[in-house]
Length: 415
Image 1 (cartoon, rainbow, N blue to C red):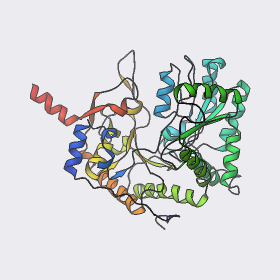
Image 2 (cartoon, helix red, strand yellow; image 1 turned 45 degrees about the vertical axis):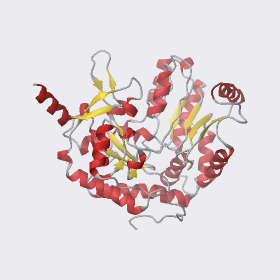
Image 3 (cartoon, rainbow, N blue to C red; image 1 turned 180 degrees about the vertical axis):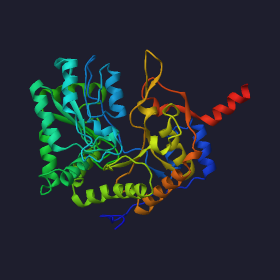
Image 4 (cartoon, helix red, strand yellow; image 1 turned 90 degrees about the horizontal axis):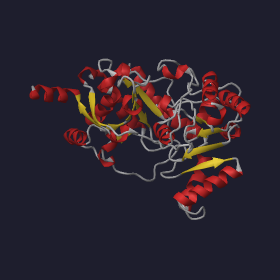
C-alpha cells in the first residue's frame, strides 16, 4: 500500500477554505513574508507546527545542555541568562546520514560541557525526545541509559522534553535491538525510569488542543514549583487547566501508546517523505515521526544563507499552494557575531512540515507532496529574502522580510 489506512473513523469535520493566490500574495506582503503572521483561516493545509516547549532553568549564569534545544526552550533559558548548548551526535547535522538514532546525545561533548561549566553550574541536562530541531530524530534507549550513568557520576538530574515520547518509543521498538518484543507501554516505562523529571506540552503526543505538565520525582522540587505556581497562576486545586482538560490529558497518555495509531501516524509521515524522495526532492533522512524537513540548502542552492533560503521556500509554498510550514534555519537560529557583526548560520537550513495528528487525510497529504514537487521543478525562479525587522529574542515569530528582487527595485529607483 502506498499509504497506510486510517485506524479511526472521522465523525467531526471542519471546513477549510481555498484562498485565491492573489489573496495569499497580499497576505504575505502585509505580513512581511512571515508565515506566523498569516491568519489560520487563510491557510489551506497548515503544517506550521505541532509544538510548544518549556524552559527549565531560572538561575543566572548556569548551563543547561541538551541534544538540541528547540527555539522557545533555548530562548527561555537564555532569557534567564543561562547557557543552552547543544550536544547532539555529529550525524544529526548530515541530512543524508541514515543513522537510526540521530537524536542521540554525544556523551563525550556532554562531559566536556559539564567540566567546562563546572558541576555546580549545571542544574540539569535536558534530552528532547524526539529531537525536533534535528529533524524529529529519536534517541535510543541505550543512549538514554548511558546518559543517565554519566550524569550519576556528577550528581546531575536528567530531564526529558517528552512532548513526542510515544513516537520515540515507537522508533525504539522498531529500530533498537532487544525491544521488538516489548510493548510500547513497557518501553515508555523503562525510558522514564532513567529520568528525574520531564516537561510535556500535551499538544503533541498528548493529542489535546491545550495543556501540559511538569513531572518530578522529588517531593521538595514539587513543593518549590507549587509555591512558585501560586504566585504566577493560582492555587494548585483551582489554578491552571480546567478539570476537563486534565482528564483529557490523562486519557490520551494511554491512547497515544496504541501501536495501530502510531503505525498509521508514523506511516503517514513516511509516505509523504517517500513521495518527495522518489521525485528527487532533498529532505532530511531518515524521516522522523512527526514531520518532513525539506533541505533548503539543496532545494535552493542559488540562495545564500544570508538571504534565508528556508524562509523563502516556506513563503513560496504558502503563496502558490496555501501550504504553511515553518522555517528552521537562519531566521530561527542565526545569530550575530559580536566581534565581526556577521551572521553565524546554523548547520541545518530546513523547512519543517509538521503533520497534525489525525487531522488530514491521505488525499490531502498527496496534495502537499504534489505542491512541493511542482515547487522543486520551478526552484530556479525562487528569490531570497532580506530581514527588515527583528526582535532581540525569538525573532522569527515577529520578523518582517522583503523579497530580494523588491529590494533591488527600490535601490534602482533611488539611484
